[in-house]
Length: 240
Image (spheres, rainbow, N blue to C red):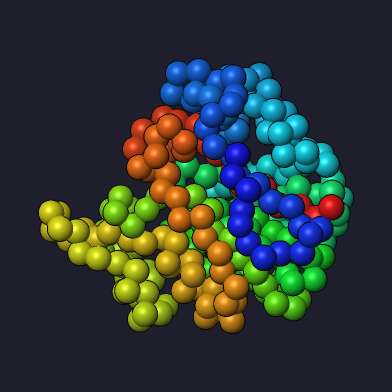
């Protein structure tokens, strides 16, 4: 379990899971939290309960059916609902916001007062389309961000279309891409830096990062790019 290191109010709790400590086997070994990846539903339910107990969560998280969209839902009551979205925002203590990842970037957000929090699933498409902007507009006051484990800049191969999607919006985004040293017309993308750039453009200067690569750490993290069929880790945030 990873406890984010960031300067947030004491009433804001956050945690990110790793792949050890659960009951799943085979390609999903062992703390798979994704119900949609082909793992045994019973094992996933047990894993989710293990994670809830380990992190002392106040209730069932809001689990999302993530589709690489820019949709952010606002949740007012702790209900353990499942919704189609890629971000979840709340002002209600006890509502646990969650996003699942296996290379995409989990972004946790709070304001400096600690009375608003959100979790965002930021793959390259959602990031380029504005999921962070969509979520940050819901906040009042200074926003603080934590960027969790994601595929690193030495492993994330992308094509010209991805470079163009970001560079069209912000010319400085090209600084987050490096020509692939071996593959023609391919680039290596720094997903975490791209998120930092978007946050900085919004005036968010308090950005903290785990600086952990999912692709290059097979014992600690699931990675879709590395393994194909695999599990999901998750990142959580809530107000006590």
